[in-house]
Length: 330
Ligand code: PBG
Image (cartoon, rainbow, N blue to C red):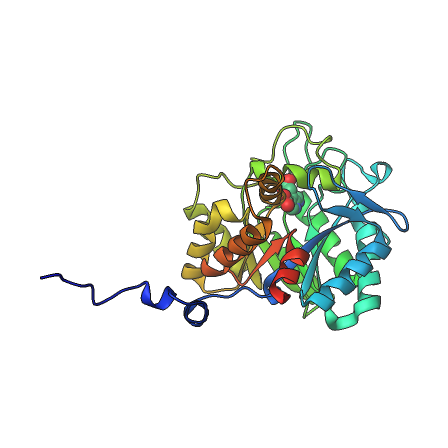
């Protein structure tokens, strides 16, 4: 006598309507944060060779991208400046200039789009320093924590004054979230959020980003004395715990796919909004696979994004944001 399985998990997978009905997580344009690189000039689109399909835009182009994002249902942009070389210095003080590229871009987006889109701004000194490190360095090149935090506080207030909605410190200094939160409260920026790059690893996946902001040629050495060791998971939970205690509204795990376990553990441990940054090297990997005919871009992009949602993320920073939003809408 043949025995049949009573439970057949394939039953619910047999038709498209049934698969749709049983799908546990969905990714929508509202889950996306679109990172954009700003450059000087007017009418400039400057393609980034190591990030095929991604360009630096002058402020007018950034505004056009912001309008595009609104139309696509993308709720938030993440801005990064490519600071002119003559505005970079040992101490990165251009970060404090109320008329720097970043502040001009923030104001232009807010003028054009008002409350239709959020602007998340990166806080760290690497786009402004002549040495490409995220903070102030001593003679030996060691990145100084407390002195850097003072600069980051000034940078955050500068961005908030220009209209930033979410301050996103990516520097990995200790104690910066508390210091920035206190300063924001003191300056009546009560509703300006902080999304902390809480668990940011010293990763080999950031190469194209450093090209994009123009710091790769400047950077000597690495960032291992402040960014996390890829072998550590318990430490990521401590980082997140600290940043939450200091007032972070949401936390980020970065890079994305290679660190999905961290995103998942952070969500399970703290139950707070967790975001993942699918970083430049991850984007470049997908595009490289597509370029040699080894992958279907659309399917791969959507699959990676749903993976972040399944792991517990509230959203994803991705250079594929506009493309993905278009796919979701079609
Ligand atoms: C630096 C910063 C980096 C990224 C975002 N902010 C690079 C680094 O730490 O060197 C990487 C993003 C990406 O690779 O897409 N503050």
